[in-house]
Length: 333
Image (cartoon, rainbow, N blue to C red; front, side):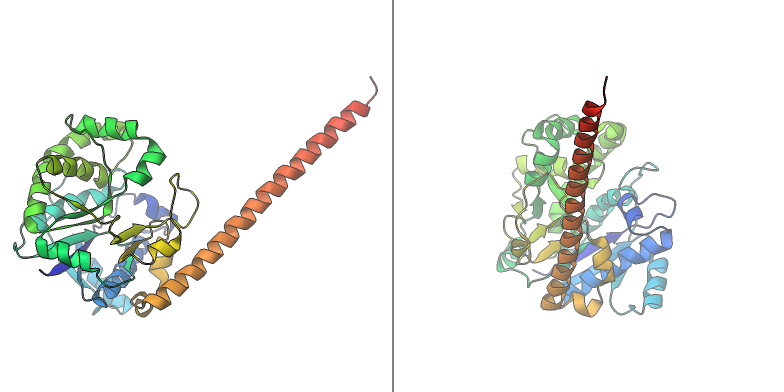
């Protein structure tokens, strides 16, 4: 069965892009930022025999940017019909339109095996045999990141909010939004489940701990699994790995040596790095990993210096406080 992957770039000029505000100021800068990452992801996948298509709501803007960047032949772009109504100003605004991509996947031919991946990813290894087997068998595939979310937010909080969207939720497993694969029949079932969940989500969104597609998809996936639909875990199979380069996460993390052996590498806090890599470098495993490890070393050196500086300041302030106390003691009453 053919494996075809897609990415989403929903363009919304008047909506805050949240995380992207860190990396780029203007709408045009953010658009090109994501587009360059999409080109690199596409090249890395094509190198390993996997087709990639960028789905968008504004094909003309994308193609104009590709022409300007000289990447017209590097990326396949497709425009689909988006029907989801997303409240203005909602955090992670554009990610909610993944629900429309699920609906689009449901309309494809049944012999296909398709997947949606985030743009801040890169393929660093060949397609593993287990993924080919899953595609051939038509078994859905997601990324269970419960071991990352539960230490950060607490299982009771996660389960409580999921049950507010669907009272029958029991396990409260959390699935990352960076990867979801399956045949069209799976996406048809997922889309049917997601629609009423999303309606409830919009009513309660301001009260939920998480805003974004992951909340809706995680609830829908547990419902489907209770209906007897088996969903494989891409993380435990080594198909994908989410790696954080900065020590800001609250969950234990394996060394990067583990992640560099995955088929897909997700770098959620390294969007700036991914956008600056050249397409020829992105498709070459050794070149990309060498660059990224060099980038990591720089980050860790900076973080180390910042830590030493904080310790020095703390020690210096402590000495100043002690000296002040000694002077006070020496002042006669």
